[in-house]
Image (cartoon, rainbow, N blue to C red):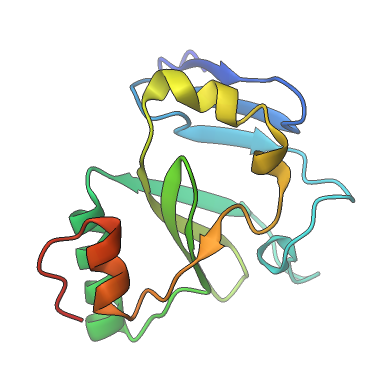
Length: 150
């Protein structure tokens, strides 16, 4: 943590690991023990894969997240595995060929509210939020992205 000038965000049960940050985003680095009992298709890795398992990048606004989605769809042919809306985040989940998960998100609640959320049963539920159709302009407009053009 010293290398990144980070501090602990949350270690309270039921969180199976440690979240660290260096700014007002709840976690910039998470080290989790996703032992048996954690569920969800996105957490299933191929037996022959190696490396990290889950990487997150946070955007400053819903519109920036929508523009990232549009770029990945139009220029790279990528669609999210899942798009979820929860109390603290709007998230898009993508996977690479090794089944590493990439979460692109926007934080929706104040930084001081995040630790409390990550200490609740809502955090451990799967999926951690309500699905939405990331290819529908109306969904983005409802979430607050002005001028969604999908």
